[in-house]
Image (cartoon, rainbow, N blue to C red):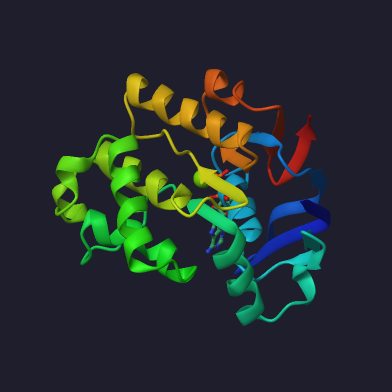
Length: 221
Ligand SMILES: Nc1ncnc2c1ncn2[C@@H]1O[C@H](COP(=O)(O)OP(=O)(O)O)[C@@H](O)[C@H]1O
Ligand SMILES: [Mg+2]
């Protein structure tokens, strides 16, 4: 699914060059469920953003489903993102002037799902995430935990081949957290490749293996 070879990212600062990711090489197979762990500032969110094609400023090689992402133009990368990837942002990134219902519809509209089917899928999703009562509210009218539920629902509604989730349970209490993890596990059983960032050992154990990042390096597997 994913092949990384010597992926690197750095920022130019007054003092010179600061590396955030160093020689990241790894392979993630189709159907795997991988957890990325490591201290704050280790580069976890940066790595996930690169994998999700939300950050195009890096060096090295990245193949997704055989496509050389490193050689693609921004427009082609966006197309890959829309076609294959669901992304849960650490800070949710719901669209403020759309309702919960409308936020959930967005990934479906990217894939040209017809209106009738869109309605059915959004209704299912509201049900599954127990947010039916919130469908006409705007993100600012929701608690952090509720926004996170909507963010996860939006990321998985179009059944992406790959789900990238940056601390998808960070704002949830433990019952909701386990509900989300059980749901991810179920999606993974149905074939979705999942890469999650988590600080929680218990939630990491839902996956097949852990990639440990420290100061931008993979330190241990
Ligand atoms: N725009 C930026 N300029 C310089 N350094 C940055 C910038 N954005 C992020 N960083 C640095 O990159 C490092 C990795 O950040 P991040 O990927 O968010 O870490 P994590 O998700 O593991 O906590 C941090 O040290 C952070 O300060
Ligand atoms: Mg982070």
